[in-house]
Image (cartoon, helix red, strand yellow):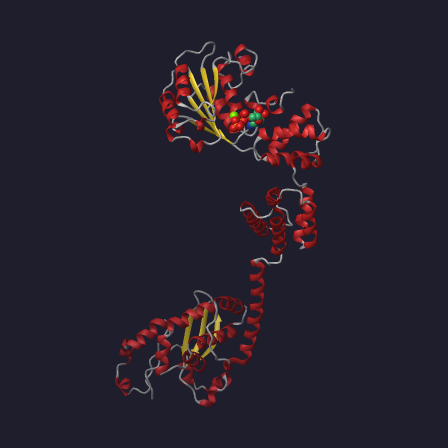
Length: 541
Ligand SMILES: Nc1ncnc2c1ncn2[C@@H]1O[C@H](COP(=O)(O)OP(=O)(O)OP(=O)(O)O)[C@@H](O)[C@H]1O
Ligand SMILES: [Mg+2]
Ligand SMILES: [Zn+2]
């Protein structure tokens, strides 16, 4: 019988070992610098190179030119090691020798010096299979073996090892091999073997090996026989009973384009295939698409598909009919395409709201004070309001401020509208003219923090307010700003700079020292909030 490819291509040097570079490097350095431990643990996926590495390491320790990272391969020690008949390399399979008696025998063996080699090397495979008693019996020897003894333990399941064993060994974790690395190695083997192949076919084999080089090489062995000539996707997919990636590509296209008929036709054509296999294949296929950033599939779509496929798998596990589950799963994937992405929905909603809001903003400005009905805005509306407001003229913003105040407190809005008029907005300072007096003034002061907050919301953070107090004018003169200017006397003009008028109806104020007015609690409060540049106190004639 021809030697199986996996055995024929077993790595015999560290440089032959594929995909485990960091392990080869560390072990090579240890060999070259003679910094050797007495017990090593190799863990990792089946067929990833643990036993091969253990054998290379053993040979490297025993080579007559060594210990060396590059055993000569020609000395007697190397040759015996390569042929698997070195008397000082003792391989034990813990899966079939798991009891305490087996370990006792092994321990007995460690007491005798090596026959021909430098070391006596014990390779214990599948070490996690040992019984608890066997582990306990091994502990002491593992910790302090005779100096000529080296242990190499290998396992696919390190979590099953007692902590006592883990802490007594140098642990090396073998990696799952990437698909590309596997495909490349398969191509290398086939070129050595003189067999024709297509890269896509090797990719399918590599994907099915799920990270195990041995599994991949074993499948390759089968494929050579099955293909009877060139190894291509047709022979490989039919050998493995998997769906051709091109077919999957078309299926995904049909799903993305919501072609239900094509999807149903697929399930009929592939009715003889295992539903679970197709679901697994689709999952792997989508994963590849995601990794390769296929523009047709957004992360969100892939995520949605994965969930549906996982649900399909779950239904199969509880024994639902395969054909039905497959059909249901694929149709659910079609359905998923109907759902707009949440982002798209939010965007659409936002656009609509912005449009509505800007329409109402224009209306409001036109109708001015007429629209006083209050309604608490939602957060969304507030955001949009802000957006709209930021593009408004300062005068319009001031109008928005009044609207906002109305909205919060009708009286305050009214007070503002009737008594306060916009002058300018420059250098982050909002200047307005105010004719508030008496009760209204008290109200203004009370709500000052709110006013300040709204001003900052509308005009921007850090906006300063300059309040120019002004005596209330006669009815006629308040009609239009232009008229005000015309009708104002020189005295009134002087008053219109920053000033606080004493309470006009208070007789007592007339006799008071004008400066004591500054000590009045209300005046103090007002000054604190307004922070005016200049205060003029005038006796009312
Ligand atoms: N890293 C690798 N580089 C090259 N070939 C590898 C590698 N890993 C595994 N192989 C191939 O797979 C075969 C089996 O490898 P090996 O016995 O070292 O795996 P293992 O990790 O000990 O597996 P198990 O856990 O099943 O014992 C080798 O003969 C070789 O052909
Ligand atoms: Mg092994
Ligand atoms: Zn040698």
